[in-house]
Image 1: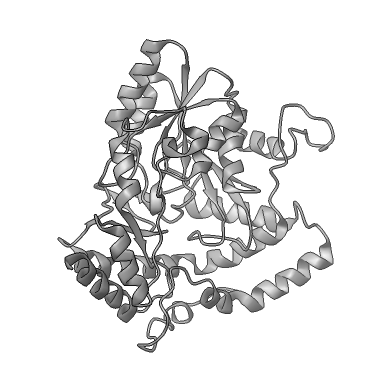
Image 2: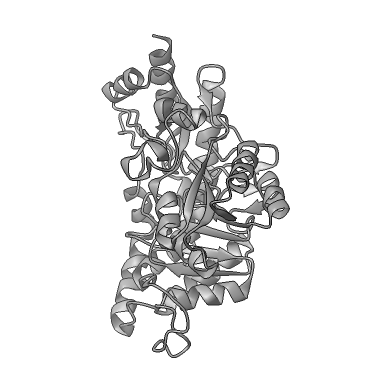
Length: 390
């Protein structure tokens, strides 16, 4: 069953007193609930709660939509980062370069695989990995000689693809692999290619608040190489072969439940219409906030998937309080750079990643989801502009 644009856009006009939400899963759920309930019944009937036909269906749709060679559904976005590193044989002494302004899963994935995360500063305009600082960090690691550079793990923060043209050129020059952390960016594009088919390997997340999410944990690895995807299928089932009994390589329990894949399949039917509505909301934000606050900006040829809409405000605590007083929620992702967290403080010194540290102090995410009305977006802008100018 497909959903028409009329169904997905009918809720744009809302009463002026309708509450503004940072995310809205209930409105979306109302559109797909009958189909989901039928899928629950189907899953109960066939009894394949793990590895059921919904998993294959989800994988096929992800590959078809993004244009990648193959997709492998896994248990979480973090597993989608760890498993490719395991497949590459990342081990002690291997350096994996990550941005310092991201969710802690990016650093955890490298450490769990046995590698060492080398933190790279970000571009203050895109919030994504700075290719110039990446070169500096690779050169420094090589000069030091204690670690071996092996891979680069850019993050497509808030929905915006990293600068893959520049990053891939650096990777090629140093014979490094690129694994994209696209957990927040399904629906983003770079030079006409969807996130999932830009880098050699892309990890995405089905966490419920993602632009394409399930109703629990889940994720996927999108690959440009079918053979690598088959290796991922082995690793997600404890490294077993076709009989799922004998381990032929080291693996983990990385399986995705049938029920989560069923949710993603139904949400895929809404996705392109929802993406257009995210873009429409962002266009209002862009126009109203131009010259008022610094906004995340795309590079030429990029399209933001708008998993989040993020601005920079110097008086964030006060601004956020005024938004809250007006009934407007906001989010901070993230209030610490990676190296400022206790578990990762050994990775870099305080003050060594100035752009990451600054972003942690002044970035603020505004309501962004497909079921905002135009009036709601304008209200957010009205209150934010007044708060910033105060």
